[in-house]
Length: 244
Image: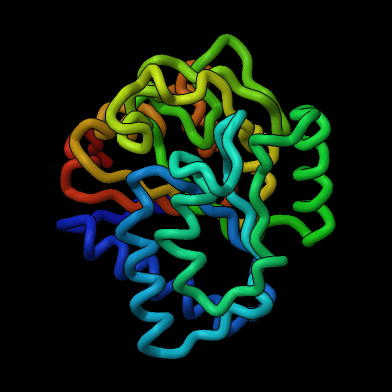
């Protein structure tokens, strides 16, 4: 893993935003894997501000989001599609047909997972997968468990994960759906390049385990150790427990 440290979240976001937009300029058909949640918000702010300033062309870029809540559609305020539209997609000159999202309202969720895997494959795979990390070490909605799913699947969310997403549901964890659709570990690791963002002191312990610990299903992010091209970008809080 390549470890990069930043004094604050804004510097991290600005650096990564610049790198991604430079890649878009050099490879207009770039395929990006994107997370939702709190961690990437500063990155998305940087992307939309520089896109507007420099008139970056997103028209041929493809995106695939990591996950979505089961039982929610794109018009539901708590859905990740709604978050992505508000924070990024509605601000970019991107073709809506090139935005890949899981459908939490699909009548057959297993079939929807298979459709998503096929769509990623048809796009030629993901070039750069951006990840956040949960305080329990999850990536996407791949929660700590005795075993992990390889491919896109229906996940049962742990209480800590529902607590972390409560802000999207009026602060009430009980309103957070108990299940979600998520890329699996093999799907994530199939990306040609991975960038992990971790910010805040609450992430420091799992970041240290991800980098220095054993590879274990109890810390799903630890599987990033097996990927040949991973960059971990940390702010001052998140790298507090990590020592090279």
